[in-house]
Amino acid sequence: MSVNVSARQFRDAGFLDQVGRALRTPGLAPGSLQLELTETLLLRRDAQIQAVLESLKDLGVHIAVDDFGTGFSSLRYLRDFPIDVLKIDKTFIDDITHDAQQVALVEGIVRIADTLGLQVIAEGIEEPAQRDMLAGMGCRFGQGFLFARPMTVEQSERALRQGGGRFAPGFTTTSGRSARRAPPSAATEKRTAGLEHLRRTSPMSDAVIDEVRGRRIRSGGQWLTDFASCNYLGFDWDPEIAARIHPEIRRWGTHPSWSRLLGSPRLYPVLEERLAALLGAPDTLLLPTLTLIHASVIPVLADGGHVFVEASAHRTVYDGCVVARGQGATLHRFHAERPEELDALLSSVPARTTRLVCLDGVNSMTGNLPDLPVLAALCRDRGATLYVDDAHGFGVIGERTPDEPCPYGRRGNGVVRHTGESYDGIVMAGGFSKAYSSLLAFLAVPTELKNRLKTSAAPYLYSGPSPTASLATALAGLDVNERRGDALRADMYRKTARVLDHLADLDVHTFNTDRLPILEIPLGDPADLDAVGAFLWEEGIYVTLAAHPLVPRDRVGFRVQITALNSDDDIDRLNGTLTALAKRFRLRPRQ
Image (cartoon, rainbow, N blue to C red; front, side, top):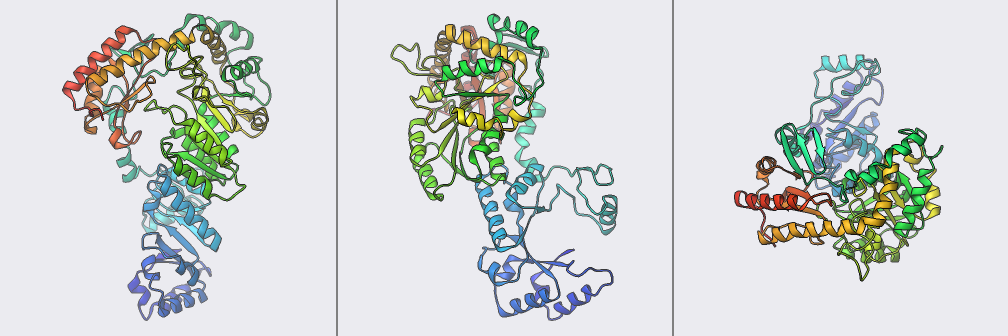
């Protein structure tokens, strides 16, 4: 049993006698009482405090520091006083799932406590993601609304009896009865309020699509022009590609159910060989999705060492890094536009430890590229592996040549070739789900690492393969890309340039500087997002709304994506709507 003690109670002359009488209560097991003291009380470090603490320890009482981290923490009292438990204050836990600095602070507290032999309890856990992240750090105990709201004595007794001594609302108790899950916390509701409001009120969010005809879609009675599609090359409606599905299904069925470790249809090695040739990579490994790749491969590459994730990396990349941290790695954050920052971080870690640097090849919101040659050279100098997520680059950008039909380059073979880099020290992850419209993803890796991943990456070991239709369309897509891909990319570039030039004429800002077909348009007033979404919907334009917390508050707006399947009439309609939008709402001016 844990009891809070105020500073006034602690200094009372009869405090020790009161504790002694409580410990003599019949049925109270020795060592079952824990007293929680505030950090500010312990910071005084006077002789009286030391004497009372020593006397409490003689009585078998455990001492916990409550709200650790809020009282100008001094590590000295952790050494000087007989403390058993640190309780990490709730303010450190609230933002832990999306703030890398909070992660680093909590991880540091857990490690210090472990070194000193102290138990750690995290306060204020309100979300399963917080619980899972803390458990991954080695914090085995926690309290908060996720487990239970405050209870009366009678409620506590009933809950403990029902659960056989254990109680966790929202989970099944040991008695087999399902306990009531606590409602979302105020902090969670506040953080997701904007997104939840859009989900409930905007037709552009959580929409049900009833019909698709190329880049014309129908939701209910409203037909819209689709500028939210990531199917950049238009392969989702290519008749040559669609015709390749049924012959393969007749040969392999709709979905061979083996994990890849058990066996793979011949389509897999054929695809991997052709893909490696296109990328100019030593080898490739096909897995179902990029999300699965990040979650399983990043921890393998990190190997319990140090992981450096770029601040604007896609959430699925960050989540993979968090999994790596849960398996013993140390997580750092850097900014791609500040290579000196990454250099300092890499040089600060101990020699002969694994270093893994993770970032996006093409940013999924801005459509911009990092300075990959600079970052790759820095990683090679520091002995780090560079892990690049090229979800939005593969199929769109490729190797540069003097006779290239547009600045996207040729062949669509990804960001590594586009920037003139080699695969020395680089692992590139990419997907067919964007440009190739197929549910399939890959890694460009050395053969030695490929073979290692076959026995260490969970999707290869346990996951079912991609559907036969996805394998067939990916293979057919490689054929079409070889013959028509450069012409499709040139047309896509031309249409993208038309929209970017029109935004410039309107004096409307976009974060896009590399002229790739992803245009993020921020609003002058984030509060207008709901009304802007409704306006675009009424005008028949379907886009991706970018609400907080999906983007920072100063970047709330919407994203437009141009594909080869969008017609020039579609672009005219979009530009006309943007003109009307700029007259009606305040958009951020060009910088």
